[in-house]
Length: 223
Image (cartoon, rainbow, N blue to C red; front, side, top):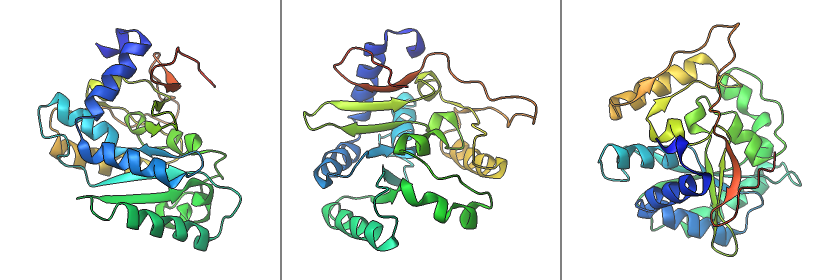
C-alpha cells in the first residue's frame, strides 16, 4: 500500500502516474508560464488520472476538465479574475480539454448563491483545496520555477491510490458529495464510497499526511 511507503517514494509514484496524462503535464507547464500567485492544478484531473492508471484505463478517461486555483487577494473584482481567465483561454486554446481558472480569494462572493451554504473567505489556495467535498479531492500540484513539483495533499495519498472516496464535511453539503460520488462510481465502479458521517462524528483523516512538499526535497511540512 502506498501509504506505507516512505514519503519521497509516495511523491515519486504520484508524479510518475500523473505524468502519464500528457494533457495534465501540458496544463501544469503552461499554468506555470502564467505566473499566477499561489497556484495549483487541483481536483478531478489529478485523482481521476490516478484512478484511470490504477484501473488500467486511458489516463484522460472520464476527466471533465482541469481546474486551476490561484490566490490573489489584492484585487477581488470580477474584471481582474476575468483577465486571468482570458489569458488562460489563449494559452490553453489548442489543448483537447477545458481548463477552468478561479481566483480562490473571490469564492466567498459567489459560493452561497451556487451551493446554498456560506463560504468564509479563504486565506490561501490551500485553504480552498482543504474544503473539497471528499478528502480524495484534496490534492494540488504545481511546477516550481526550477521545474520541481510541489504537492499539497492534506489527507495523504492512500485513499487516492486505493480508490476510496471519503467524505470531507468541512464546507460542501452532503448532497454535493453524494451527487459526485454517484457520478464517479458510474465511471469508476471499482471505487469504495464511504457514507456521509452523522452529525456527531468527525470525518477521519488519513494519518499519513503529505501537507505540502516539493518532489526531490526532504519532507518539510509547513503546517
